[in-house]
Amino acid sequence: MGKKKSDPFSGQRIDPTSSKRHNFPTYFLIHRISSDNETFHNVSPFLVEKGITSSVGEVKSTKKLRSGDLLVEVESPKQAKQIAKLNSLSTIPVTVNPHATLNSSKGVISCGELLHESVEKITEELSSQGVTHVRRITIRRDGQLLNTKHLILIFDSAKLPEHIKAGYMRLSVRPYIPNPLRCFKCQRFGHSKTSCRGTLTCARCAEVGHESNDCTRTEKCVNCKGEHTSFSRNCFAWKQEKEIITTKIKKQISYQKARKLVKSQTPTPGNTYVSVAKKSISAPSADSNKDISTVSISEPSDSTTRAPPPITNLPISASPSVAPVSEEASASPDFTDFKLVTNRKKAEKGLSN
Image 1 (cartoon, rainbow, N blue to C red):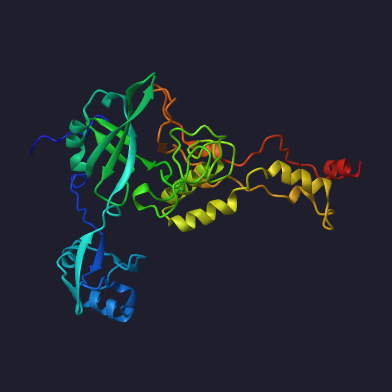
Image 2 (cartoon, helix red, strand yellow):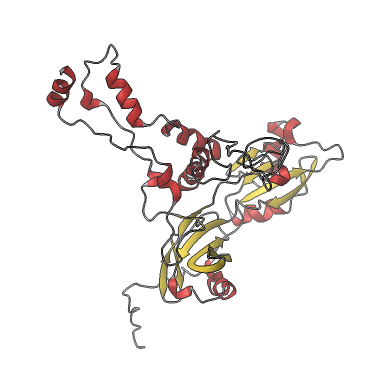
């Protein structure tokens, strides 16, 4: 009998199949080829379904995008190969390509031991774990660009791994939460300058027709009408947009659903829970005899309570020696001076006086 192999010094058993990766693109875009720029907007959904099923089999999902293209999610490597070879759908000529972003995911790791390693070396060493690209988070201090221990990793799978191994080190992978995308032309969120259909608007004074480079007018925000620039991080609209993106990524839901959820949980500017509580006490309604202790306060969503927090884009003033803190907390409801009543008798006695 051969010598029995000992377990690793960490006490964890190594799964011989864990290093084998079977990732494949799961999202594909089907674009209709037409000399008249026709799309799938005017094609029967029955015809589309039969065309996909007869060529690929029953797929996980098919959706029509606003562009008129089809977004198809397949279930197996076999279906991925079959759909990639399609050049027609029934009698409609098409082109098929993997989706540019849905087949990948972004995560962040923090490791001081990798501070002096090049991103090229890190990418090479982590490629066997599905890492296709590495970017180091930097901060600017006193005019100098400084490296941090935080690295943004792009994986070749839509599902983000919980951890990776960098040599002998096991590192947790957190979701990467990008900052809101603001247009440098109209100053609105959600699109870039290249695709903007709006009017040129000053980021400093919110007036149309000029840029902010030489503007000296009073500051005013385009998005929330506050007395600050449109690129201010103290803007209520910016914070809300950040929370929407955070909720979308953490809960893995669409932007529209995340926006609806965040707006339903966020008080309007200048209308905090404190002011609402004071108004309800000073002007009691017909239901004022109800037990005050039953009044509930919305708990923060789990997108702001999970640990550890995701890494967000670092502010310019951040210290390289301190881990970056998510800006979600600054967008949380204001509970200042709010006192929760726990004793019903004392509450009723206080109101009667």
